[in-house]
Length: 248
Image 1 (cartoon, rainbow, N blue to C red):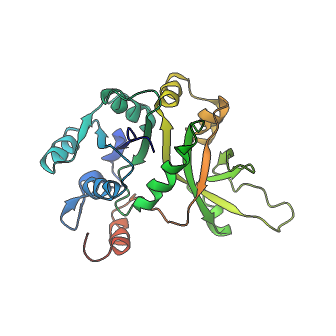
Image 2 (spheres, rainbow, N blue to C red):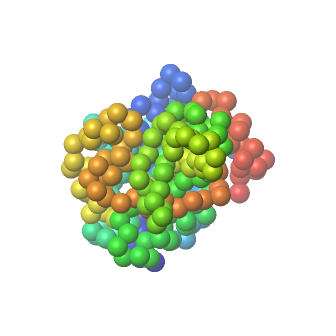
C-alpha cells in the first residue's frame, strides 16, 4: 500500500446550526466530537497523515489545544469535497496519493471501514472507492438513506435517494445503502472540483453523481460494519452506547 495515503476529515460551513448548535465541539466522554473521529481514524495503520479541515476558528483553536493536526480552509466551498481538495493541496500531495474524505461527525467510526476503503487501491487503475451496506426494505424507503446499485464488478451504476432497484417483481431485491466515506486518487479529486455541478447531482443532491456523469468509475466495497453520524443532540447517547461506557 502506498505510504503516501492521507485521511482528511472535514466539517461543513453550516455545522454550527440551529438543529445542533456547536455540534463539532460537543463533548463525548470529556473530549470534543472531532477528537474521537481523529482517534478512531488513527487506529487504521494505512495512512501517513490525518488532519481536520475546517473553516471555523473555534474548531481550529480546539484542534490545536487537543494536539489534533488541522488545516484552516476557505469559507466559500460549496461541498465537503472542495474543502478536502484545498486541504490536500496544502499538504503538497502527489497525483497518485490516496486522499480519504470522511465527515467529522462520526465519533463511533470503525477503523476497519477505512481499511476496507483503501485496500482496493492495490489495483493501480482504481481511481475512486466508497462503501455500502445492506439495507432492509423499510430503511430503503427513507430518502436520507442514499441507495446505490452496482455492476458485476461492484462499480457503482447509480446513487439515489429513491429505493433502487425498483421492485417490479417483488422478489430477490437487495438494497444497499451508501456510506459517505470516499477515497480518491488526488488527480481525480483535482478534476472533480474543476467540473461544474452535474444535472443528476443537482437533482438528487448527491455530489458523487458528478463523477459518474463524467465517466469516472466508483468502486463500492460492501461492508458489514455500521456507521452513524451525529445529526441531533439526542444522537450523542446513541453513539456513546456504540462506543462503550468508556472511550478507548
